[in-house]
Length: 158
Image (cartoon, rainbow, N blue to C red; front, side):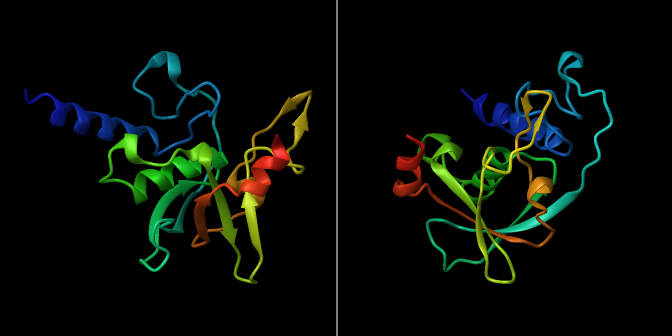
């Protein structure tokens, strides 16, 4: 009867601990993993950034600061922002990261949609490297906006 809340608290604590360091977006291996099999053993240089995110449901609300790693893929960043914005909303009622665009609003007025793969994606030895915040050179205190994917852009991919 009362197992749900303690299990959820344990889940949140483990997730928070794992997200303190890099997590491989493909394999799920993490620098701070509880599982010996899922531990990243190599040294990865990364920086912690605090980015400000605008709530997609209400752009007039205050910006939400979220801790992000510069080695996070764009999908990982979207998931962290969705967790911060919709922390009191059941997962079944939250938007999915795949249905959202991440727009970086630069101080010079330029707006850029960030994606895991685009024309700037690096290919090394026939392997594609997923784009990260470091790839786009996003700096600390940057402003980003999560918004529903545009219909025009989705139609271009089809």
